[in-house]
Amino acid sequence: LKQGWFSEINDLWPGISVSLEVTKVLHHEKSPYQDILVIDTKAHGKTLVLDGIIQCTEHDEFSYQEMISFLPLCSHPDPKNVLIVGGGDGGVAREVVKHPGVHRVVQVEIDAAVLSVARTYLPFMAAGLDDPKLTVNVGDGFEFMKQHRGEFDIIITDSSDPVGPAECLFQESYFALMKAALKSDGIICSQAGTAWANLDHVTKTLNHCRTVYPVTAYGIAAVPTYPTGQIGFVLGSLDPETNFREPKKIFTDEELDNMKIRYYNDRIHRGAFILPRFVEKALAAP
Ligand code: AAT
Image (cartoon, rainbow, N blue to C red):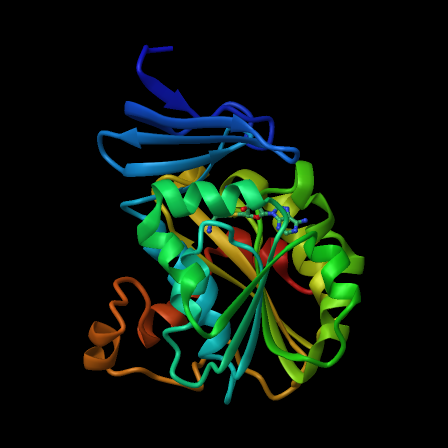
């Protein structure tokens, strides 16, 4: 491999790899949970890497953070209380607090070291962690969920991939625990990987969601520095009237400009659920 490049080589996507030319290694440590690396890169700016997997880059993080936040938020008629699981960089918190209806946001991140690394090296995302609407807890999202009942309108699981500390966040039992933590018309949205490299994983995660929620969907977003350049989200709603394909809340272009939103709008929302035929077929309800 060429020197001075970071390559995301992982058994989760055998035979393919995203590579970034590194201009500087800013930080490297081993926390009790994972290997944490922050690099500066030529094309994508500051980049957070956990256990060798790219979590976010400065230049394209907005796509993921906006979509995992606004797909569920805009599918709900009145999202007041939001729980974020993972998301230690602060990017999802930064987006969720932009929604004018959101009063209170609770976050649970397993790794305190990710929070402090983000505060030091990724302030453009970590700014979200200091919002007055937000309370940050350090702990395991799976355990945290057991302690909460009927509390949240929205639960966003901004989790790393299903190896290491995030493995539990993809199990069927986790989808059931989230149901119990939601209000009766609550909505969940979880990072669920890409159909191009992990169609089986996407199908499995969506089927777990289907066993618990009457309405479900899989939506996609373009993120150039994630494997295959695309990421997906599994959404579930306890309200049988929910239609993820048609946003309940539509922000005007002026509102989106004021909110500094660069990827999401109502057209992107509808389009996120329009899937290629091979994905549609694989994800058809069993
Ligand atoms: N905001 C986009 C980046 C992420 S971050 C995923 C976060 O989930 C990390 O900070 C990690 O420490 C945290 N995490 C992992 N397991 C748990 C857990 N059990 N409970 C709480 N937090 C957890 C997502 C990147 C997606 C990458 C796609 N290839």
